[in-house]
Length: 216
Ligand code: GRF
Image 1 (cartoon, rainbow, N blue to C red):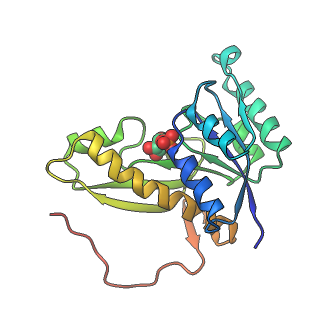
Image 2: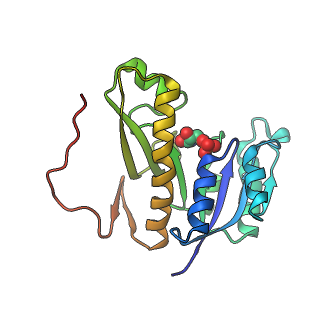
């Protein structure tokens, strides 16, 4: 099967990047990591990429305060230089502008550690706990111009337990993130995702059943 060329944008530790690398190396994900780009020079993600002989690039945002479009134009140049087909945001702490989205229409994915549209933004595990939600989880979605608002591709549900802390809940959600991000990318690679308005239809997706979740 054709391997989809990925450009992964990161800012930090890169555990989702690592899961993608591992799934590619084990052969369960038909993709190739063309480039990993960080806006932070010291992001551990860059080390992870280098360890696997993947191009690791720091694109500094230093001269781009208040000029997000200008910064995104740099990203587009770097991504195109590496013939990237699908842009994967994995803990990238900047808001993407139309400059990037126009260059990669319906070809930018993000992962968010909550069940969107509930709890967009930052510190969402804490917010979910404080709200008293009985379920949280994670969402992979295509990126649009809003913050965490794009069409949803896949979600995993994680129960919130009475003794959960922000850390314990985040850790259980992260485990699922590592599974569903690669799964979403694989569906893309297989040409099974079709965006219709806000909905992402999946060829061979689930059929009607009696599945449900209750907590407690
Ligand atoms: C993850 O929780 C992801 O959902 C969010 O940022 C975090 C990145 O973690 N967008 P990592 O760098 O992949 O470990």
